Amino acid sequence: MKSAAVKSQLFAFAAGSLFAIGLVVSGMTQPAKVIGFLDVFGSWDPSLIVVMAAAILTYTPLFWRISGRSMPLFAAQYLIPTKRSIDTRLVLGAAVFGVGWGLAGVCPGPALVSSGSGAPYMLIFTTCMLLGMLLHAAFESLVARTQNARGDSAVSDP
Image (cartoon, rainbow, N blue to C red; front, side, top):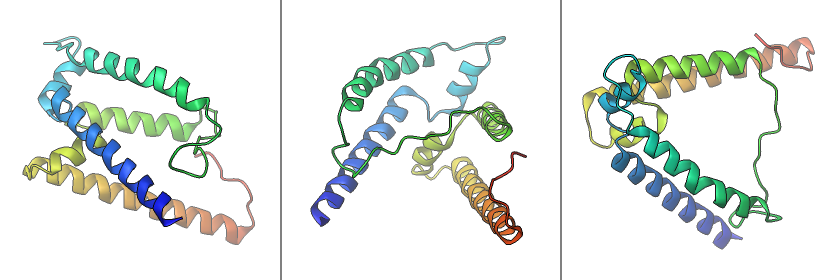
């Protein structure tokens, strides 16, 4: 049993390392390059389209092959989201993510990778991002406790 857990963690580490290397090589850890890509009405830098196309071309056949398996190689079951609806929380979350990405030029993955460089800007951004995640988790926990205390069974859509 422990052997499977170790294999799973090693695979996760290898996949995360490959992802980090890909982010660095593609330029996704350079805020100026990302902002240049997002600036479609200014000095647009379309080079990140190649990164996105390569990701899609790599992911799609692997997804088809992997999804045909009855169970994953390094886990007891697939962890596939079941929620399919577009609600206020999803739209607001996507908007906050997009505005943050556009203003800062980084998103969570590249921010974590770039923090390894020790650059003050990235350390501040990553610290604030992690604090935001902790605040969100605390808020969600408070909402869940409040709803349970009142006897609410469904989580309301803000």
